[in-house]
Image (cartoon, rainbow, N blue to C red; front, side, top):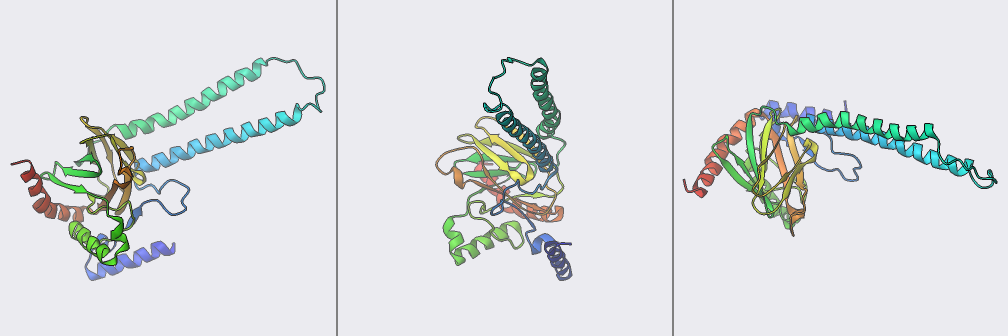
Length: 296
């Protein structure tokens, strides 16, 4: 058992003794890029796990191809150099070799197709989900609506840079976020954190309905394996299911204007119990605001 997991276990035990839930005591796992990282983010869903595995398969294939091509180049340069072949061969073609270099790439592409098409189908076809979240991209923020929970609606904005630099402002922002979530929370990443977060329960299939109010945006959450364009006048749909409690970060991945780099995504995955408590609070504050805005 690693020190990290042992520490997490001790914290969970302390939280239970003190009468708090684990998610209320600590934010749990962080789905975000790591400093000096060189690989994909750790998968937090079955979707992301399939993508990571497929990426590894492609990496293995291209590595073998690269090694083979370089080895062949060096062999040809050594074997058929002018010094070793004072009289050059006049061979123009070799039927057997031509068949191989035509058939082998076809077989490689067929293998890639056999492994990629099921993954594309798995991502594209939305299974039966528990509820939906409507995500609207704006220049430059995200509006989240819960149509199955009395129209809870709020807009998530990037946390300003000065907030991270000023201890008092950061504490105020963390207190505001904690009030929104219903348990202690902290800001983790400049340019990735938002003043409020999309809240979803773990181990629950959630449908995401994507659109935009102005230009094309793209809702991307790498550790969950989701990336889909938000297009004005069109409603695209995808889905995800997060395995572990934690905070997962993403960004708009479609160049959408001046502040494209300041349009982060923050998703808070909580237990079903914590999600139900959050919904009860959010209905009182955000559902009424959405209803008023619609003039109802």
